[in-house]
Amino acid sequence: MKVGVVTFPGSLDDRDAARAIRVAGSEAVALWHGDSDLAGVDAVVLPGGFSYGDYLRCGAIARFAPMMQRVVDAANGGMPVLGICNGFQVLCESHLLPGALIRNDHQKFVCRDQRLRIENASTAWTHQYEEGQEITIVLKNGEGGYVADEKTLDMLEGEGRVVARYLDVNPNGSMRDIAGITNERGNVVGLMPHPEHCVEEGYGPTTDGLPFFTSVLREMVR
Ligand SMILES: NC(=O)CC[C@H](N)C(=O)O
Image 1 (cartoon, rainbow, N blue to C red):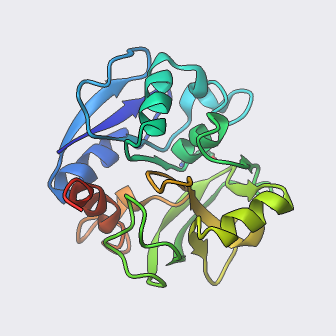
Image 2: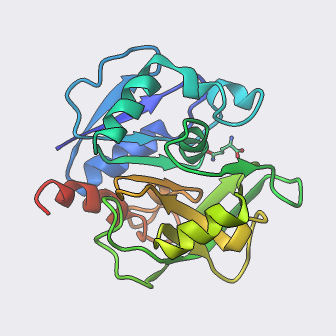
């Protein structure tokens, strides 16, 4: 299986995302923001970082990249797309996911090992977890506060579209402790913490992030 990783100017975690994809058993394909050919990939990861220097708002400029027009079309056609941190911000800015990520409520960049509960283990990126499974992966963001209006939040909860929730500490003021959400179809997932940094023994606090990448690999035969 081929999983594309889009690099924008200012992307930081594209190499780790590619490595996580390979560790899980897929082929990682580098996709450049300015190109508009998906190169035959079966899924896409939008990695973390500071696309376009976070100017204006995180993800606001990346949304207009030529490659993003292709990704939006492919996602609407059912292709699995995972946005990690800055990638989650790009997915909200692209309207593939509802709501927005705003500056952390304490106004500081946060970097910590974060405990989460997987709330939805049926998406393209989470079906190798158990529903309710508690994991610890790293978190690092400046604009990670998830916000949406009450109606949208109720809709996300009612439809089981909250994918992961913060446990112990809400690190950024996210409404209803939301760490990740999915679209109606379950192929597009946005997640604020970083599973790609937690896939190998000896690097990161755990290997709890690996099932995101094995899920999409098995998605093709599910
Ligand atoms: N780790 C990241 O992807 C950071 C995303 C974004 N630049 C922020 O600070 O919120």
